Length: 505
Image 1 (cartoon, one colour):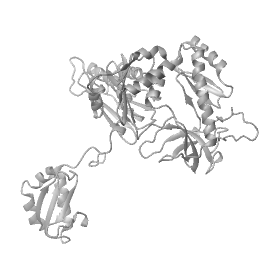
Image 2 (cartoon, one colour):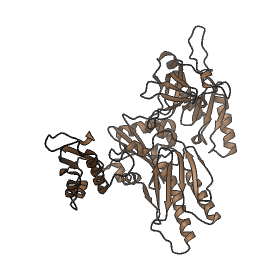
Image 3 (tube, one colour):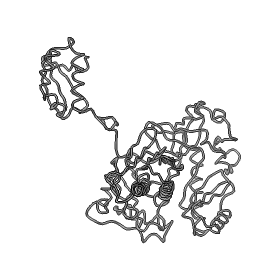
Image 4 (cartoon, rainbow, N blue to C red):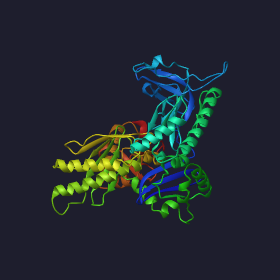
């Protein structure tokens, strides 16, 4: 049972993809944080870095786009242009052969058309390519290319051959086409309509590339909801439920054009309680924010995201099993394999991922867990590479990262612990204050006021510590508990002048 549930608010839209009632993907779009992947910009090469074999391109956004030499197209997307004498034509740089240095392809100040392939992540700007593509529901148009590609997920040889013949008869001479999985079983007429729409869009891109100044948005990819319908609303989805009447009308209109047989699966939610509450999605989002994920058997997985990689640890927790220990470990690992695959999709974790399953002795059991994980990951649309599980029951994979993880988009770094996840204990804070007194002796007045968090104040006022400090360091201390002071910090004032002296020493 696969459902798509859409929540539309004034400044935010959320999409939940459910499999058998479980949340497997959460998509988010805010009015001030629109996704830019797929957008095409007219940019200017601002800087070339030979050491990185990359260039930084100014495209009119807060951060410059990063263009690696490997992302420079081998073919000119404007090669299909038929211009009359005197008509202007956009010149797009191309990679003539492997090994060509980027400084021999691009030059500073050069105008260039780029398409975003990865949103800005953290301090990094967006990543871009000069290989331009326009995605439709059934096909992807690649201007300048000449090949025809068929989705690998279409396994039937006869169907692949039929689609190839249909596209060969339809596609323009100087455009390449990739046939998407959802095109399986579609008629040539349906494919033709999709192709015509993409060709019309490409004509507008060519015109805007000439007319618009550098730093301009030339082509905007579909918004979150239209892209969702284009890419994921297929016969496998039993229900598409949305809580906005205006958006419901737009969705129905669009689906009637591209997949009329799916219109009756679209529903307008009319309930009184929020749609995500009604379908039990909100609690699953709250659970997603936690490091620990409980497994049905009582075992657990712990997910930690660092700058370099994502580390996932599996342990038995409270589950001890009833029979053989090896069977217990296998049961927990098999549950973990299924749940980790879901969590990678749900949290949209990318980059290098290291999974530490519980050690098992049996090679047969190790193979079972590896196969179970790979099978569960087949439902994940992101590009990935999974290495074999090693003798330590560790499995390493890479997963495509095109935007910030959903948790990074929903949260921000804690100002108290600064992302570490831990703060000083009250007793450690008291020791820090004592060291301040040691350094301050003879440099500040003898009467001091100390402002600290209530938990630290409680520790300071216990066991006669203030008297000990007075005898040892000669300071008369008055302690004030203040909840606005962070647990990791303290403020110290001269009791007579009222001046803060915290930074004096």
